[in-house]
Amino acid sequence: MSKAVITITDAEFETEVLQAQEPVLVYFWASWCGPCKLMSPMIDSAAKTYGDRLKIVKMEIDPNPVSVKEYQVEGVPALRLIQGEKLVASTEGVIGKDKLLSFLDNHLNNN
Image 1 (cartoon, helix red, strand yellow):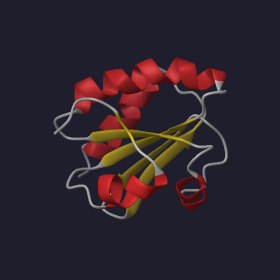
Image 2: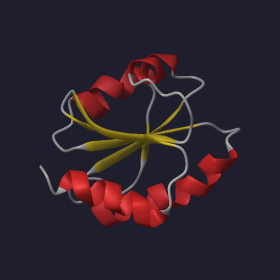
Image 3: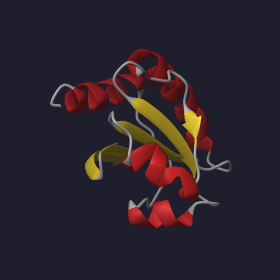
């Protein structure tokens, strides 16, 4: 499994997320989003920490309206934890590193 965050588009969503063998954390962001710049290093860190049991992808919202609509992203940064085709958990807005790790631990340990 990859330990790097993978950048995807709407066209790749089904293959990279819905058909993935492991849970996938989708990080929705925007280039104009100041808070996203705060979250990006934490997402990269989470990829290194959880890379053995979680795939992390990032998706810019403006060029990918299909996934944004499908997963009801109303604000960025936004996280969606998906296993198979099931939405396991979600959060929107900036969260601190502790909350991010807690969010992942709580949901990954239940699988």
